[in-house]
Length: 258
Image 1: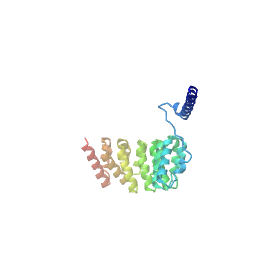
Image 2 (image 1 turned 90 degrees about the vertical axis):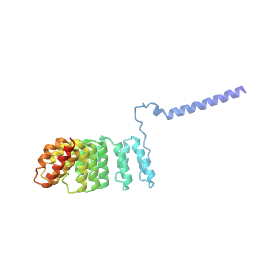
Image 3 (image 1 turned 45 degrees about the horizontal axis):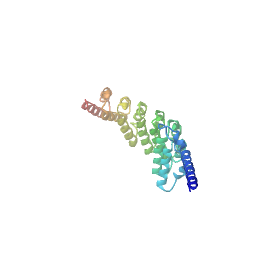
């Protein structure tokens, strides 16, 4: 009886040792990772293909898995779906790319801004805004001239995201455009940028285009910066009555804030 018990105990101990060694081997890749280091989840081979699944839940799950993977290869997989005809999938792909991409991917999206498919262009503009890199400003500035409303509006919003004098100047240059959708997007964006947009807007008050002057005065009135007073006083004596009126209104708004 004693011999049987001992041999059984030995077998149990051996089995336990095998289990411990198996578990240790399974998680050995994680043991060496420090707490402050990101853990990259590998992208399964069938995940990219699942983006085109007929099941919306499968598509969105695949995109989310790629977004969280941390694998540079995921950018390529997502980029291939940037022109997906499903609006919801396309938007989700663009949002995932904005979260996953790095400045090294900037040339890819600048090239995508010239794509013949407008869906690719506006989604690429969204990604560029998410990257927040000032080097994207020239491509987004060109996109403000895009005939597609969704493209030029997204470009305007992305310029606001990037911010800075260069982005503000790009938006100011289209204040005299004939497309209300673009002008409204530019004006709203400049107002959000606040003090950063004041100098380009002051320069716009000296433009020879009355609409540009008028819209610049409107935005300056909403921003309410005292720095704009000299330029607005100049515009208040412009030859165009509408420019005069808007400049005086803007001066009144600034005076109210004092």
